[in-house]
Length: 238
Image 1: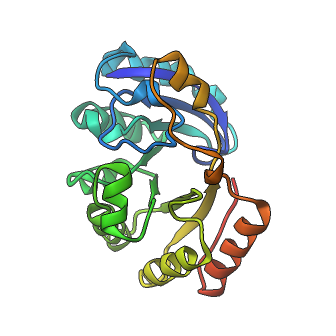
Image 2: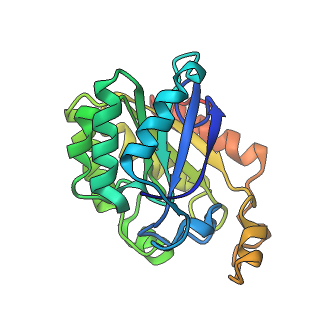
C-alpha cells in the first residue's frame, strides 16, 4: 500500500479517536482538492498490509470513544485489493473500520461486509457538471449510495459546498430532491470550501485555480442547510 500521510484524528473521519491513513492515487481531479500530493498513483511510502495491520494492533489502546481505523485518500479504492485485505483483517479483530471515498468504484459493495462506516462524498447532483469539473460523472456514486442503503451499510454522505460549482440555493434544492428520494438511512454533512491545500499546490509546482468566489459565507451555508433540513434530511456537524 502506498500511503502519503498517517496519524490520529478525533471525530472528523469517523467516530472517536481514529488512526487515519491517506492512500496514494485518485481518479478525480477536483480543483479544490486539499491533498494534491495524493493525486498520482506514485509517491508516498510503500507498506505491506502486514506492516499496517501490526501498526494498528499496536495502536489499539488509542481507539477511545468508539475509535478505530479510517482509510482515506487520495481515493482508497485505487488500491482496492490491498484495502479489501486490510479491512478484512481488521474487521475480523473487531476493530472499527471506515473508509472515505468518492463512490466511483464499481466494486465498492464488496467492501460493505468488512466496513463499519462508509463516508462518501457527493459533489454534485448533475452528472454532466460533475464530469466537467471533476473529470468523471456522479452516476456510479449515486448507484453506490443505493447499494449501500439496500445492504444496510452505515452511511455518512458529505457535500463539499463550493462557490461557483454547487453553492446556490437552487443547488441545495436539487440536492434535496435527489437525496430525499433515497428515503433516509444516512447522515448528511456540509463541508464549506477551504484553502487548506493551496500552499501544497505551489510547493508541488501545480497551478491552484480556485478563486475567492469559491468561498461560502456562513449565511449562505445556513440557508443551504435550511433547505436540506426542510426536505427531511438529517444534517450533522463533525
